[in-house]
Length: 368
Image (cartoon, rainbow, N blue to C red; front, side, top):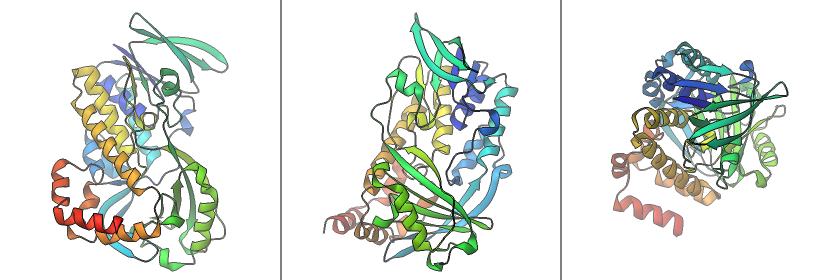
């Protein structure tokens, strides 16, 4: 069996490692140079769930931790709620380096500065058209995996685009002493999430050693740049450099015979915009399909994506009143342990959270 993977970021490299570990010939084509991959604009904050996931990849999570968080605050215009947590800022570039090296050690081949142009399928085989240094060439495979990011060419050319939607996330890194409005300054081992009409879909302020990482995400048509500039005015920060990235909204895209989309290419995102854990889980799920003909993990992943899509719709169009009401609801003590399993809410967890009394509280807060 021969598999071609388009895209060498976390989803693609994870898939290459898992498949090559099983003796499958895995070939990865990446349009960027090796030194430029992994530098994505995101907060890279992960719950403790990542520790168990990385064990499956033979990676010690301790080697990747840049910062540990033990608390966070959620703030609306009029309210503030604090949570205890166990979360980590991860070194995304180092994680990616480890995945690539482990995949290469198992026999996977990586080709950088190589662009995907299209494909044809004949008699169950794929002919993949690629380009490097302005020269086109063709490679062939039995299965094609698109792991080529939010604007996936594999998705577009395979008919799996599915009218996907995006958030534009803008971010800046500043020194801690540059924020003059101390109301919004997080603890050195904590972070703040801001909800309300002035904060887009949501905004965040993370401590990262002696710096702050400040971000805001929302639908591109909502003038996200202006929203971000207004956020910096509120924080009384005068000098900053903006970085940006498109993040797909959670959506179950599906597959076509012999074609899989994973990570951002497959819109496998959390409602908070995080994609590292879903990317690793998607790589594992596709490996299970190809190696063991078992789709249970893939179906579970889709169930989680549907749940995240539901949460995304819930948090969109966030008025100040709705933000205040959310904080009123989550004051319920049953939500105190929510941070530790928010990456995956099981049916058992939902049963713990939901009750007639709590559902009535939601209805009163949102429809009164």
